[in-house]
Length: 461
Image 1 (cartoon, rainbow, N blue to C red):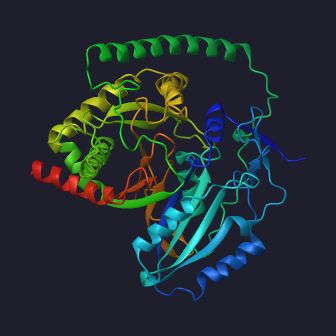
Image 2: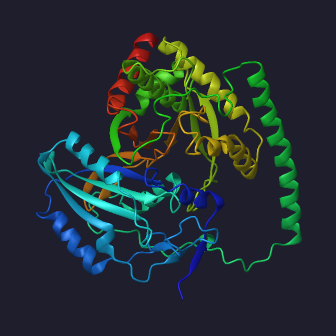
Image 3: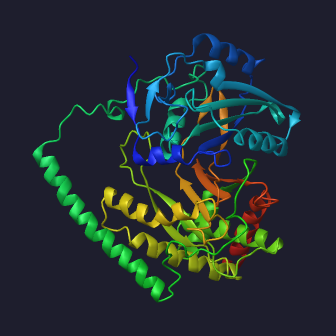
């Protein structure tokens, strides 16, 4: 009998949110440069290996127990006894020499298709035909199975840190961690129960204090501490189609740090500033820029450093993007003040308290997702912007060096644009993804984010 693994409430939420238009999978696009003497027909040989030698371990071999009803209250992960590696690992090709525009179109199309819940919900596409012998890997996985933190960790284990390692497995072959199993057979001790009660009482006090601060900020009309439903209506907060558009941008971390430090901000703050500047310009071009400041929801990783990953463990804060401010430096300072106030609300909270407080902040999201309310009520926020730490050392796949790592996340009904950033070595890699009907010319966000940085650099100089 296959082993089972229960879902956390947040994992279940991602399954419940799945629809024809709102597909709850995340992904990544990675570029690889060839070694000095690459093998001929490298990817063809790789696919032969996939067919004959692949063995998958958790989480890659886990599928839903009830695929016809993803949001079933008793849903669980079970091992796929008929796991078919050829279904999950695929080979594609661009017309040579393929360029970044053609690659972006292909990845946009691949990300527009839902995953099959009758199988483990993930796919890997090896894409050949790029210039100079390069190839790309596009990977997607349902957010209920793997969150961004776990995805980065699994990536680091699945690639090699050695350029001469020619035997990297297709999957990182490690048995499931015992911490991942939840069989319910271990009874909590009385000491553990008392500790949980004390922790919950403390969490309740901290949450009440934080909610009171947010309520008072609304009364004072203090825009530096953002409340739910404070976001203005916008064209990106409408019903969406299943068609996606994807664009990328890459910056040197030191370049961003220099500007952020000059203004007393952080890397997270400069990410918001570049996103805000890009959104402001694109919406203004389309005569669709709201008069009020747009707001962002920022996921917050709350795992301890040694956490093995799996499932989802994130909190959330809300911050102003200050898109109503024309001057880029003034806009940046307003963003810094907003994130500083939002983070201060989490100080002193336990992990459970942060998750509960975040759930309270996100409660209005449910109301804004009611079909009749989409586009009519104020959204809970305008856009999700995530910053995920990535690998800090060069990674290789069979001697091919990974050059970049671009994340793809989830646009969903009422929230048609998502911006996710992943660090790799000395770079910060932006992935802009959205509904191509909700926001025409979305690819310009990549260009305008670079121009926003140049404006801030010029003002700083």
